[in-house]
Image (cartoon, rainbow over all chains, first blue to last red; front, side, top):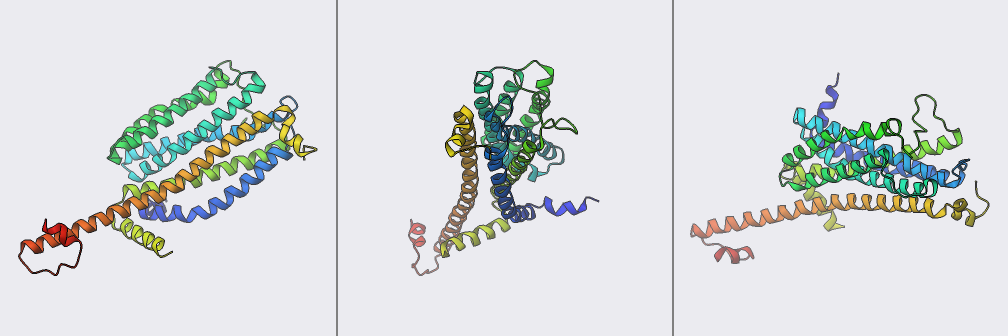
Length: 252
Length: 86
């Protein structure tokens, strides 16, 4: 049933498949993000309590959920690589880590810029904020481990162990607003079935969210391709590919 | 449109600094990430190309040395024959 997946375990097939996705992802992410951001900044209504500061929501929430989503994807990749010795999964985990780190940083910074006018402080050591900060440090540790070893298999193993241990942080972030008393407000969008938002706020949010997902996929594809090349640099197909690419550049 | 003028849009009902700080920092970080990823891809290709050229040169030198040690007359028209004779 899943046999059609087998060819994609080949680095060369995966490299070219990711390459074919790039133009589509670029066009779609630019389209969704420009519609979503313009809608969020200029056309969505202001919140009745928070006024126009609410517009930070349209970046903050997608960034925060993606920071966790990317971590989950990275953990699945690390698990796959560890259990089935599937080396391509290491390459994808290494490609995801910097993207996740940037989105965690965006979530933290936009959160601080939203917290200052709403709560009166940039930062508070409460459960949600602290666990998200730990997520950033986990990402930084994983990036450091990936580049700490000359042998990429060893690096992937070390980073994979840290990734899997750090999974414990995900439910803590997710449920921190329910388990502890915190300044951070509860979730608005993902209440199962009925989001407690009006449609004219929900639509621009969905555009931004889908746009950010597409952008994340795009950047991960670019980095995934670099990781594949770096890990397979002595394979004949990479050698021919590099030769033709450099020849093309010299001719142009 | 929620705003009457462009200055009202920039002001964001008094929250301008925080809103534009958020959007500005996010845009900057994402741009850095995208540029870094694209340049990283080019750098990987360049590194592999450089290594290939180095290996190619080493192979040529090795061939030359072999020829010299075999005492076979070799036309010295390449730059590598210099290194080989040292």
